[in-house]
Length: 171
Image (cartoon, rainbow, N blue to C red; front, side, top):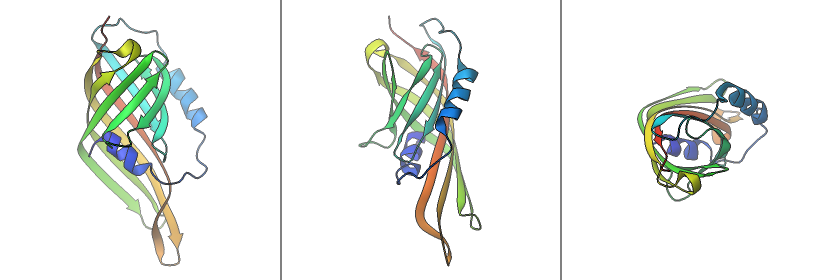
C-alpha cells in the first residue's frame, strides 16, 4: 500500500472539528520557505497535511516552492494530485514499511509508514517533470467509544507526509 493509499484510506470518513490546519500551515511555510532553486535536477521536498476527505495542503521546497493543495485520486488510491499556481503534479507512492499502534483505552491509533514516490505526469509549468525519492508518513486516527470499548466507526484522522527526493523540470 502506498502513502497516497494510506492518505486515501485513513482520510475517508466524515470530518469532525480538528486542530487548526492554518496554524500548522503557517509553521510549515515559515520552516520551508526558501528562494526557488535552479530548474534542473534539484532536491525537492513536499510536506502534505491530509484530512479525512482525502484533500489537504502541500508545501513544496525546491524546483517547486510554495503552497498548494493535495487531492487523493478517487480511481487509484496510490495516486495523488499536487496543485500549485503554476501547474500540477500527479505522484504515485509505494509503501515499503508500515506499522500501526492502537490504544484501546483512548481509542486513538497511530499509523507510521515509509516508502518511495515518483512523478507520473505534470501540467502547466511542470509538464514533462520527472523525479521521485523517499517518503515518510504518520497518521493519527480515533474511533468511537462504546460501552464495550472502542467501536469500528472512525471519528477523526489526519495524516502528515514528508516526500524528499529529486525533481527535474523541463524548460
